Length: 192
Picture 1: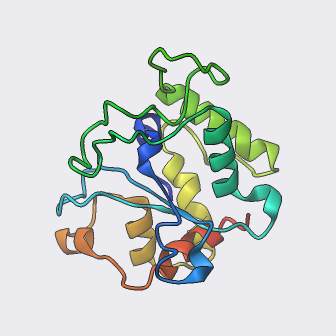
Picture 2 (picture 1 turned 90 degrees about the horizontal axis):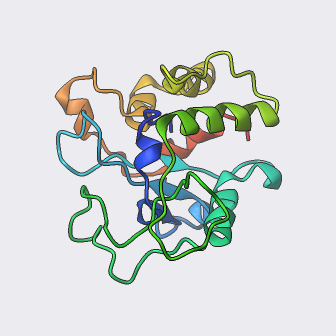
């Protein structure tokens, strides 16, 4: 999903919900949902959960790469994680997911990435796999993130649910499909 560029800098290891939709259907094993609570259109207070689907090429599998990164950095959800009790609050027990300095494994609190580091990292990653990053910027990564599903003719309602834009009616802020496949149609538009 094309969450706001600033959202990713606040993510913690406990915000990555690996195989969240696997219970609904085996085809969703190996996918992930990302818990984001700092969203204006979250009128119901339940959070925004953009999905990361399965790539068509193993080398582009973002979920596996994120899991490998977490393992390499020693990131684990703490047994004392507070997200179940207070999902919208920052967990004081779990580490930031995207670290400003990777490779350090000391016990001291680790710093999360800055907003600019997120923007630079996304642009660089897309360039490395040959994606034209003309429409990806710190001002609005959503422009580029919505261009691919729009080009693939994904329904606007699905794009709105995946992106979390606030300028829709209050009713649309409550929309939750019963079948999670619509979340993965948006992800599939990137043709990874």
